[in-house]
Amino acid sequence: MVAGLDQVFREEWGRVLAVLVGFLGDFDLAEEAAQEAFALAADRWPRDGVPANPRAWLITTARNRATDRIRRDRVRTAKYGLLDTREHVEEPVEASAFPDERLELIFTCCHPALALEAQVALTLRALGGLTTDEIARAFLVPERTMAQRLVRAKRKIKAAAIPFRVPPPHLLRERLDAVLAVVYLIFNEGYGGRNELAAEAIWLGRALAELLPDDPEVRGLLALMLLHDSRREARFDGGELVLLADQDRSRWDTGQIAAGRAELDRALALGGRGPYVLQAAIASLHTEVPCDWAQIAALCGQLGRLTGSPVVELERAIAVAEAEGPEAGLRIVDGLGLDDFRYLHSTRAELLRRLGRVDEAREAFRRAIRLTGDGAERRFLERRLTELARTTP
Amino acid sequence: MKYVMLVYQGDAQERQAALSDEEREQVHADYQGITEMPGVTSMPPLGPAQNATTVRVEGGRTLTTDGPFAGMKEAVGSVFVLEADDLDAAIEVAARVPAARYGGAVEIRPSEVYW
Image (cartoon, rainbow over all chains, first blue to last red; front, side, top):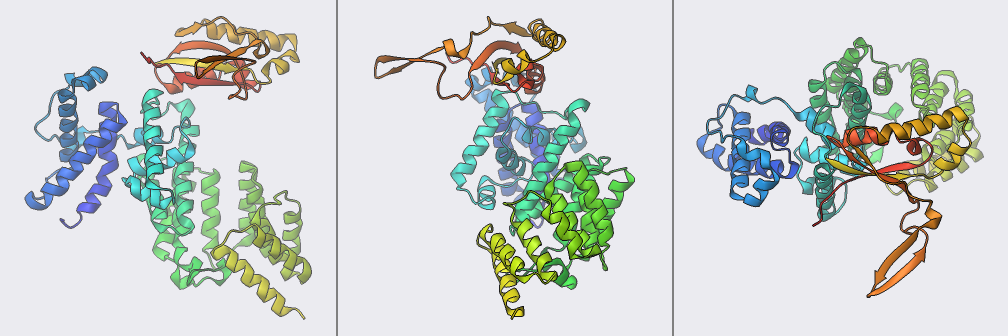
C-alpha cells in the first residue's frame, strides 16, 4: 500500500460520503458507492499512483458507480427517479466543484429523531469512516447488533425523511448542541480506556471547528477534549488510577495542553461562556501549577447555574475544599441529593479522611465501593480504604 | 412526504379542563389553526379510549376485548394527515398540537404504501 493511503482514505471518507448523500439523496446507496470507489482506489492507486486530485477522483468514481447501478436496476430507477437525468461524468472535475457537505451529514446523523446510540454509531461510520466491526468492538456489542442498529437508523432517515441540511437558524443551536453531545459522548467512552474513541472524538471535534470556526461551544468542546486527553498517559499507572495531585506531570502531553489552551482562548475571544467553554476553562486550570482552586470553584459555580447539574456542584465542592479547607467542601457535599452517585461517596470519604473523621470516612469509602463496578476505579477505592485502616490505631 | 400524526391526550384533557376560559379558547384556536394549515387533512376526532374495542384474530378466531390496544400505555386521541417537506417540518407542526404541551404526545409516522 502506498504510504499515507490510509490517511487519505481517513480524511476523505466523510467528505466523499457527504457529497454522495447530498447528490443521491439515499444514505445506503451513497455508502455502497463510496465503498466501491475506495476499494477501487486501494486496488489501483498503489499500482498506477495516486491521482492528482484524490477527492475528485473518489467522488467522480463513486458517483459514476451509483448512476451505473441505478441504470442497471430499473426497479431502483423508478424509486430514485430524479437520478437518471444526471449526466455520467467521465472526466474528474476539480475538487472545489464539490461543496463540503460534512456538516449536513453530521446534522442528519445526530438528528433527535434517531436513538442516541444510533446517532453515535452513525456519526462514527459516516464521518469517522470506522467500519461496523470497529464501532461494534469499541462499544463492546456484537457486530450483528451494531450492523442492525446502523441499518435501522439509515432506514428511518429515508422513511421519515430526516433532512440532509444544516438546520435553519431557529433550530441550529439546539441541533448543534445535540451534535456536540454525541461527539463528547464518544470522547467519554474513549476516556474510560478505549483510546481510539477519544482520538476519534477529537478528530470529529477538529472537523467541526473547521466547519463552524466561529462557534465558541464547538471550540470549547475541542479545547475540553484536548485538555482532558493531554493527561491520559498520567491518569493510569500500570492499569491503576492515579489522582490529579499524584500524577507524573512529565507524562502530560504539553503540546496538546498548549493546543487545548489555544482553542480555549479562541472560544473566549468569540465571547463563549457556554457549558463546554466553562468546562474547558476548568480543565485548563487543572493543568496549571499551582492550581487556582478558588477560580475553579467560581467557574464551577457558573457552570452549575447554567446546567443545574448536581454533579457540577460536587466538582465545586472539591474545589472549595482545596481552596477553603475540607469542612467547607463537605458542607456542599452534604447538601447534595446524589445518594446513588459513587463519586459523591468517594469525595465525602476523602474529605472526612482529611478531617480525621476516620469511621465516617471508612463507611463512605465502603458505600462508594458498593456503587462501583469492577475495574481500576474500584481497586483505587479499595486501596484508599486499606490505607485508611493502616493510619488508624 | 406524507406523515400520519397520532395525537395522544395523556393528561392533557384533564389539565385543559382546569385552564381559564381564555386559555381554553387558545387551545381550541390552536387546534383550529392546525386543521386549517396547508398540508393538513384532518380526520373526525376519536372518541374516548374507554369506548374503544380492540379486535384481534388468533388462529382464525376473532377476539374482541374492551378498551384500546393493550400494547400501548396511552391511547390515540386523534389523527391527522400532514403533507410536509421533511421530518423537521412535521416535528414543528407536532409541537403546535396542544396535547403535546399538556402532558400528551404526538407520534409521527411516515405514511407508507403497503400494497
